[in-house]
Image (cartoon, rainbow, N blue to C red; front, side):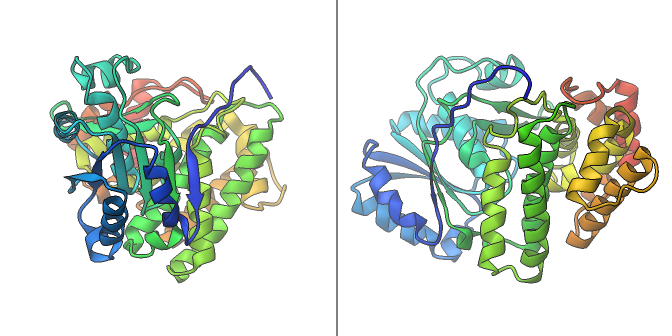
Length: 387
């Protein structure tokens, strides 16, 4: 393990079929007014909305509705949510949904009382909040982002064609999260597999950095194998509780700050994918899938030792041939798995066109923690190969 670090995560998790029973107890710790945040209305179709309202009203809460949060929440929508929270003197933001809803809630939490333009402060200057922060709680209905146990809040600015994530500190992390795998059953298959790849790539982004013998890498390999195994079972039977519970639990641990300890981390796939998303509004996990293989094949020679280990330890590739041949077989195995899940393998399927490449390249932030720092020409090359 390299470097010095501090590990602290304040989010309390309730996991399992009976997890929602703990919500009433948690609500007692907060004031009277709750802003109920949710997406397109699926929670009203599956009965979860009624369950939540019953619990909230039984606890004497005044509910401020904030429904219809879109995937890839926009800066305009965050401003509206922040205005609503401040005007109603909201005491708790309760996010019910997947990563987009949870991210939106965290963005609202730091923006409601921000006296500056929140986009400029948090997403251009990457400053931390100095204002009052409204606490956030989550009820998860889609596994993938890990937003239920981290400080990340990704927001899209449509006017500037930018999609940027700010990872806030522990003071912005959800205070509690309710994780019932059964709440993910009604997701369409495309959303489920996109979430699965989001989990997997979160692990990869942290794994593909550093060359030391690191405990974190062993944890990452175990999580990756768990995701691969559960993905096949969940695709075959979306109501396989064991598979869906393993996927949900892996998603949380993939991005709750544990796997970055002792690692420089990469995150360039996310930078590429988010830039594609800003231009296409495509599902996040699919944008990551579409750019991953071209990116990894481009940097393979710079991190050959780790890519070889990835091939042998995660995909079971035999140590036969040169290190580069073994590493390539690992990526080929990964590609086959991605095809079997039905993931997008090129950005043109997501709506990207050749005339967008230059703009997407301009919107791609360059990270320095991985095995190779990309030049702009390399970004254009990778994006072109992703078409």
